[in-house]
Structures are given as C-alpha cells and as structure tokens.
Image 1: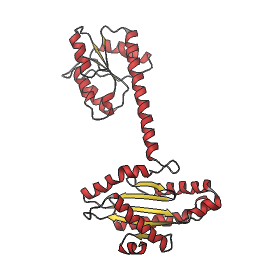
Image 2 (image 1 turned 60 degrees about the horizontal axis):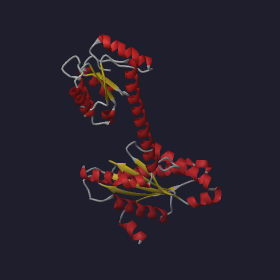
Image 3 (image 1 turned 180 degrees about the horizontal axis):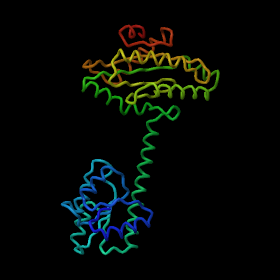
Image 4 (image 1 turned 30 degrees about the horizontal axis):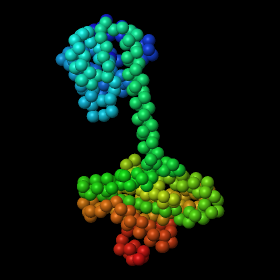
Length: 304
C-alpha cells in the first residue's frame, strides 16, 4: 500500500486488516518499488500523489514494465482528483481499477476483493498450466524427463555447446535382459526396477545434467560441459552402481554407449550425437553387456 498521508494510510490499513490481509505501507513510490522487487504481493494499492519525486502513475508504470510475471499484479489506484481525464490517465498507465477519495469503505472492499479474486484465479491457472507442462515432458513412471522433452530441448544444449566451444557428452544406457525380468517377475516388478534405476541416476548426476527415460528400459543422460574422459568415468561408475543396486532384490545390469562433442570441436546435431551413442551401446551389448563402449569407427564396423 503506497500512501503519503499517515491518517488516510492508517484508516485504509485498518480496513485491510479487517479483511484479513497483511499490509506493507510505504509513503513514497521509490520505497514501494524497491520492496516490490524483493517481495511477492497479491495486490498494490497506490495513491496518485505521493511523497518524493515519484508519483503513483510512475509506480504503476514501473510495475507494468517489469520483465517478469510481477508486471501482471493487480493495481488499485486512489485519488482525490475528480477530473475525468486524470482517471483515464491512471487507467491508461496500467491500473486495473480506480477509486476516489474520500474512500467509501464498502466500495473499497468490493473493488479490492474483485482484484484479489482475479489474482488468485490467475495464479491457479498458471499453476495448472505449469502442472500440464510438467506432465507433458515428464515420464509418469520414473519422474524423469521423457522423449518429448529431449526432442524440444536437447538440440539447444548441443547448439549452445558448439557456439560457446564447450564440451558436451551423451550417455545412452539400456538395462540388460530386462524382458526376462518382466516375463519372470511381472511388469509391476519391472516398473519398480525402472523407478529405482531412475532415482539412482538422478541422485548420481549433477543438477544441470538432463536425465531422461528414452523409452522402455532405455535412458539418456545429457552431460553439459563434460568432456569424453569424464563422460566415460561417469558411465563406468553408473554401470557399477546399477550392478550393485539390486532393486527388488534382483540382479540388474546395464550397457552404456558414450558419444561426445569436444571443446571447440566438430559441429554436430543432437540426432547424430544420439545415433553415435546408440551405435556404441549396441557394441557394448555385442561385447558381453554390463559394460561401457565409446563411439568410434570400430563401433560402426561392428554394427555393419
């Protein structure tokens, strides 16, 4: 709440408290905007005339120019001016509603209540949209990213690595003989095994790594700023961790394929990088499973 008159401010704050609202009061627009950037509010109430150089119109314009969702916070403007052109100017500045002084309490409560309700509905819609977005890019069984997310974002990681001359590596892993687990113990147990593997992979990766279930018992791990040597080291450790995990009391192993973009190295797209890791993965299967293979010309000859 932005108001330079202590008497008017206290009366309004009392009304807001009666509505069950918590209020921060600032006499100047400068103080109000500084607080606005640091805290989250549901509504802003500002007088047009304020202490200091900044007017209420400047406060509203400052809010509406915010680069984040904060710019959409509802604003109720208050003014003692009866000039119609001033009302229009206030609304054109971005205020959602306007009320004249002296404030009629019931009208003030009604207008403010409408703005708060609108803000809550908008927050609810945003939350639902975010939940739908997560559902669209998340594998429902393991909670990892899914193939859709990779299709939407993986090329951005690859392009960024090439543009900034950074290393990037990709691990592709497939659980060995997983069909036997489903056939012998049932799909419910198989699902628990996949979920346990997903949790382990997430816990053993960095926050910036992208861990995704590619499909079935296949997983992809995208490793930004990770060179080939460290990617191999990572894959070998994960291979060992999976072999030692024994989810649902079962012995499980995985085969890994590794491909990489070297710092300042070749230009390549995600599909090519993925194909190379897949080729290396098949070489790991052919060479006895439960191992790591790195993409090379030998892998191509073995898969031919």
